[in-house]
Length: 304
Image 1 (cartoon, rainbow, N blue to C red):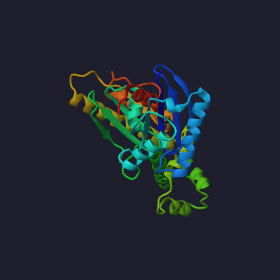
Image 2: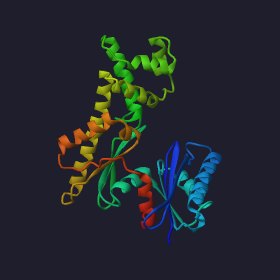
Image 3: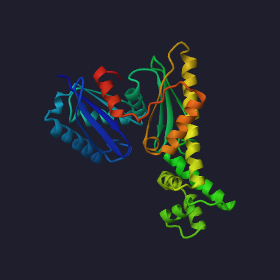
């Protein structure tokens, strides 16, 4: 029986599953194993904890594993790939493939096929892939230059629009919540914190904007709906670009992943409405995809 490991290695957590050709045998989660996020010692400890738990659940010696596949950000940096290969090879057997986390997420929805993936988490990006494996991005220019609809964008845009609403004497709860969160006694203190160098992590304000929207705050609702609209527009462009590259191919589907799109209905629903307004027949998967499943598909099929 061939055995496979699939990893989704994020900046704060790592998901891992052990599977055979047909079924997941064991699965667990631990801290990050990314060298750009944690120390080498911590990454090693987190990996050891992951695989010890997988081995404990399954009763299997992981040196029997045939192929492992890791989906992670930062694969354009050679040290990321080399580190992942080294750290896994110390604890598991077989070949090791390291690919982008957007690739494994897309494979979870459309294994090895054409499709569009919308990533909406702390950052945002859209990945398009043709049936021959050619890929391109729409958006994903980082928090300072784009990342529309992301957690960072929602926090930043929410505060900017709340301050504008204040100037125009329009009601919003966002400012009060942010002042409390940042321990800012005055609006001047809030402005100083928001403009400090380096900038604060505006993604931490996203849950506050969502809370305000859920309470009916018009400014917050507008921000979340705009973020979803912009993600939807990017996804529509990605589909049209795929159609231009492969005019005779079937319409590609659209999948999504990331904490914002998974948990914030205002953003997700606005995105889907925008997509279907422009492309009424395109399929948008109803649930967020599981990148670990895509990593296992790549491991089983030895695609890297």
